Length: 149
Image (cartoon, rainbow, N blue to C red; front, side):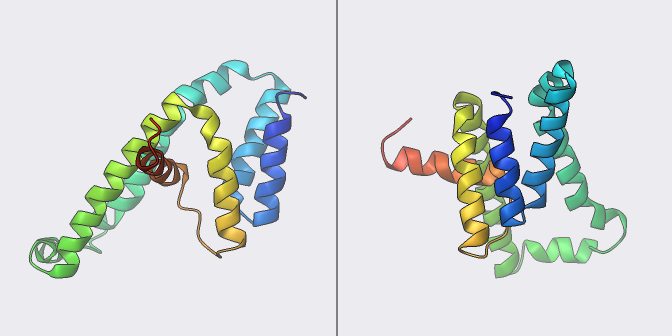
C-alpha cells in the first residue's frame, strides 16, 4: 500500500473538502491499483487528459447544437465590451492552462500542492474547484514571476 498512501490521503482530503471530482478520481485509481490494472493506469496517465479535454470541449459546445446560442449572439460577441472581454478572458485562460500542462509534464509531483491548494480554496475560501490545469497554469506563472523555471 506504499504507493497507494498518497492517493488514500488525497481521497480523505477530497472527502473532507466535499470535492467529488478529487474523491472519485483517487478512489478509481486506488481501486485500479489494488486490482492490478497497471496497463489501464498507464493508458490513463498517457491519454486521460486529452480525453477529458475533448469531453470538456463537447460540454462547452453542446449549447450550439441545441440552438441555445444563436448566430446573432455569436456575432454580438465581437461588438460588445462583455463579448470582447470574454474573448480576451478565454484566450488568457487557454494560455494559462497550456502553461499548466507544460508544468505538470515537467514536474508531475507538483500536483500534490495543487490538490492541497484546491482543498484549502474550497474549505477556507469557499471557492469552486475549476480543475488542475488552471491551477497548474497559475502555479507556472507564479513560478516564473519568482524566478523558477
